[in-house]
Length: 461
Image (cartoon, rainbow, N blue to C red; front, side, top):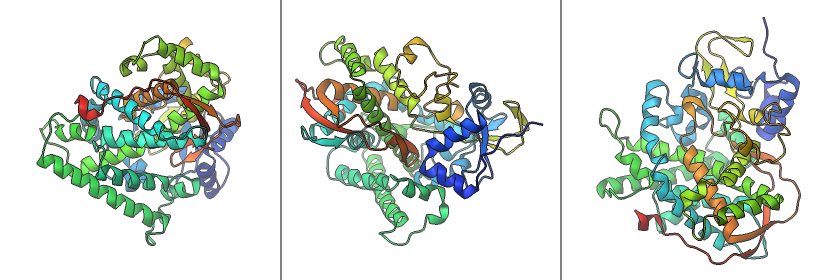
């Protein structure tokens, strides 16, 4: 009987490596053991099985709810942030029904309402940057993504509540920036409130303030409903399940926190990586600008998102630096064979997105940035999966890619940027994502004319 190879190091050492330098941990393990190996990177599960071959990922992801379930409890490490009623924490039919409620705001015509808003926010953030002075692109993209979340998702526009929420959200998200602080998520014993200045105590106080704002916003909208609002919170409040029941206030709060936690950091990271690559290789930026120019003056955001080369650049960015390193955990429901290895019931499997995206058999010269890959070939959902797959595929995928394309196109067509130097950016842990280690230092050389300011969401609703 074949036995799955194991990473040979004490549990504490493996967890430390996984928290501090996950890329090195994954690459070293794959170099020694191949497409499937067993790790000890969690305290609540004896072993996690990492898989990265397309065949194994196809088997796992196409058997959702059959041989491989996706238990919400496997995401317990983030339950303290997103809440127990988030779609991420739900199982079975309850999870399926919740997804059906959540999907409509992220598809179809809804995207049209968000395009001008994303462009306007991008222009607003970039306009605050001084010329000829270094700034970190990661900080600018974080501001863009945060404001998109507040206006498009939370539906809170400019004003006192907007500024308060903006400040508190930035403080809370910043708590998990470093690998050391990220360890709070992996070690529940560290989640102790030791006062306002302790890391977890600081987080809990910020969370309480955010909850107060969210519940106040929900109560006010119930008291004064506006059917013309197009933000995601309003759409979720009007959604009804098969029995005609709305989501509870707690369910709404948990879904908003999920969208914030999963959609803010990941999108900001993806945009910053794209800015890095497009300015490291000016010929790539030039091709994007030439492509956008074919749309004429003030192009429609929808048309921008359909541009093939821009789409390829975004896809390659998400391939070489997937913002999510792993798929949603799967649990084996009955004895099964995977990649020739027998697995017992209860085994926890993690699809390794990072290793799948750097598999030389699928993506030759995988560490080289080549957007043309996505113009020459269409990859399967088991070879390329930046947003996971199966029944747990990211709900906000469409909005994330849409925002990424609009933000990049807006920045490149309105601003002249250069990298401070050609020092390569390396991925490092930032919470649960892989962000540029130095934040992509850049200099704003000038502004292209004319600047086109898009209407606010309230004006087009």
